[in-house]
Length: 113
Length: 110
Image (cartoon, rainbow over the protein chains, first blue to last red):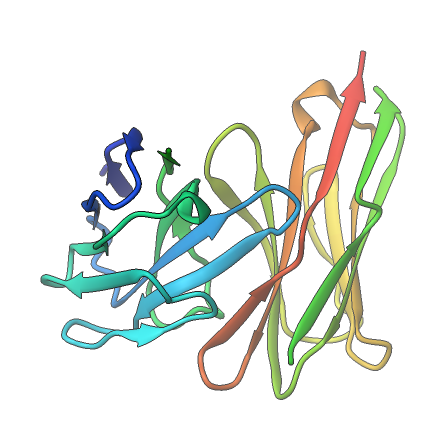
């Protein structure tokens, strides 16, 4: 039982490059989330998916797109990376809804030069 | 706009001390308050509180919610170096909203 897994663990991009962050959970959870964490700012929600086939914008969605590929997988895409997107990205899942206990992946550290 | 404020921002204590962390909030249609511990990597769940005045305990950690005064406290007694972490508070509201505070960084010195 791996919980929530994320790939890659670390990535360096040049401004304008694109990339996709992958996330998968094996807990049969309905809801999945993508957060970014910047120093002193806590966790901010980028997008979430309440259930398979649905996605909604969070607090800071600009510059990102997501895909809920199936119940297990939720990917985050940066189409044209910018230095402001340098951050640590966490994927999380919960059984139903964000007010329930969320289980977090190990994070992806992204540096955009 | 929903707001969650944690205090203090950081603190340094010695092993054996007691620590009290605060989380105050202003949200519309409150549903729950959650505490997470974040060491080097991912946050891990500590407590979820939905009712006022009912203390939740787990070992040396405990937490209580006051829905009238809109705050929660997290207590850690007999602190150990393994308690060093960032403690995050998050408040859930209707409409699938969840807002995190900025966290309190705790350093426990031997």
